[in-house]
Image (cartoon, rainbow over all chains, first blue to last red; front, side, top):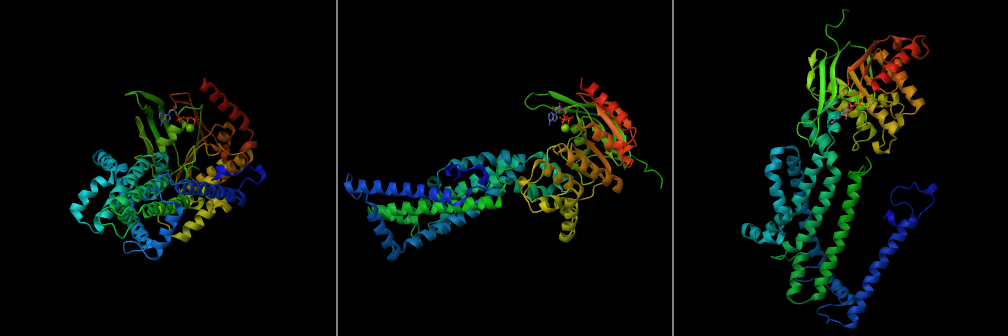
Length: 277
Length: 259
Ligand SMILES: Nc1ncnc2c1ncn2[C@@H]1O[C@H](COP(=O)(O)OP(=O)(O)OP(=O)(O)O)[C@@H](O)[C@H]1O
Ligand SMILES: [Mg+2]
């Protein structure tokens, strides 16, 4: 954001981060401009009917669907319900994945044997596309809520585990020494020094994990996914309702942006020292 | 009262080689043949050229490294690791950025199991001693280098360790603050009778503060001068008639050691 801030005399520069009204307005203006430009091009291309509306519906058609699905619903549920169910899955999945990932990362980072045994396994799971293990989860857990949550947990756990393990190994030896000289016993160190030291990197891992959970939720909802945004998209695809598909994509994208913004804010609150040590 | 049977600090035949990463078996000799015995209540100041192993000596006493040769004992017991009986002020401040200034100073008190109100009062007192009473709520990255060093001093002193180890604690301070802090450390030492080990590049500071001054040679560090002095117990060490002569003698030894 500060990149977009206009140059100001250094006398009034001390405002931290995104200081002042003018840069905020300017940054907002630029964003509005880019979104507006995109909508205009989309509208123009759709209007020119280069492709039939089944391939590329215009913004107006998608907007009408947005109104229709929010008021009358789609596949028996309103847009809000679809989104709410998906968000709940993302939330539960990535919270469980984060807790598991932090614990696993701590063990991998602190215990050399665990690193040797579990490290390759985590890397292996991380490279698997969620759709690939969905089939296995469906066989194991059926088609209810369970396989979907498990999929998101498995998808979001490795990034957090890897980030935590790396951060843990990066803890400054003199921070540990200082703590020990101040009376900390060895078992105090993970909670008082190692974890807080690793918070900035863990938060980065969490942001990646939530992102992965987001991209995976559509995969999770390809099997019996209604209600759910992914399920809605899949239904729409079966009936060639391209405008609903695009609406689903936009809703996922926008809510993802919002969630990432929330996570960034959380990051600044829990780890304000990031990059300023 | 009779004299304590064992010295507060004793190094016998201590030598230390650092292992070098990457090259198998390659080592850097940092210290060699150090024999030193310090009574409780003394202030040992170590001076010497850069790289002469001053920090290494301090870190061995702190228990951060095990000596390659010889033994280090504190109050008659061999050092096995770091402990709250030895407070440490690091050469580079190692404050915890995830805590406020107050949190840093309270950390040792928390580990000692003190209740919240007690911790608060003691931390406030220590911060006032280093002139940072109004900085308690700040984050450590909001401080200047000299302020950080003063917080580090307050943090090390807060749990009231019997021995305080300070690696160039005043290095980052301006001349005026440095003088004030030197005087603060001297009166604290006079008042509490703590055993102090500090490192400095400032020979004048060494003479004002040290009842025992040790000069190390260039790598590997060996003791080339070991002086006992009573100046710090005087009212004004800086104006004592012996001050200049002692300072010149030590400065000469440091210069010779650097060659
Ligand atoms: N962790 C380390 N690994 C390898 N070599 C080290 C390490 N720490 C110090 N050394 C080496 O040991 C020698 C002594 O270092 P030390 O830090 O004790 O010197 P010093 O007297 O404190 O110097 P200065 O006055 O510059 O702080 C130096 O040659 C240094 O290169
Ligand atoms: Mg040093």
